[in-house]
Image (cartoon, rainbow, N blue to C red; front, side):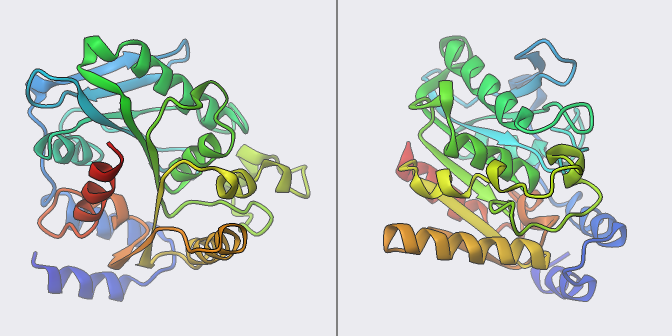
Length: 286
């Protein structure tokens, strides 16, 4: 599929989140994304005691310690996966990172309703500290780790930036794609209340936005042209708060011709428009 046909289908599917949109987008991208060389991948490394405290390590080429991307998957806080062997997503991110000289780590984390906020933040920090502690073994430069997340994963990353605790000073930057930052204005869909609490009327106290704006961690934000209206509203709210606090806009990239599903799953494909932006940001930080 060429770029023109892909973007035409994305426009046809529209921005509204539906299973048709998810399945059609996945079906278009799955044959186009790269697969990693499994000889350079170590699967299901435990970074904590829970069954979902598992990560996949995509080792960088060469023998020197390399910069690393730690990726936190999407799934509405209640589902999702880092990707099994042979799965297109998010092995594509690991393959892309290796091609560009980086190591990559994709993680699973605990899901609602078994756990609630701030479990995603806690698990992301635990995975990061695991990488720092084992950096020499994994050939990762502990001073050059960048966090990255999409959708719910972006919100977990935003929570770490906003309140890093033991992660403070342990990561070089953060990339957040189609995330939820202002919990006072998010849509109360069937999923978020399972993580933030249906019985709580005001989620503002759990919002990462104030800490995110106050942080000096280098950040790259992204949203898609055909993203859900909620994500576009969240990007606008973020930009307004950022400008009000800092007197400048955040680094915010709009992925033209993409939707909520294709935003991160396109990386490494022949249609990839985000990979070059991501590479430029990573190179600048690491």
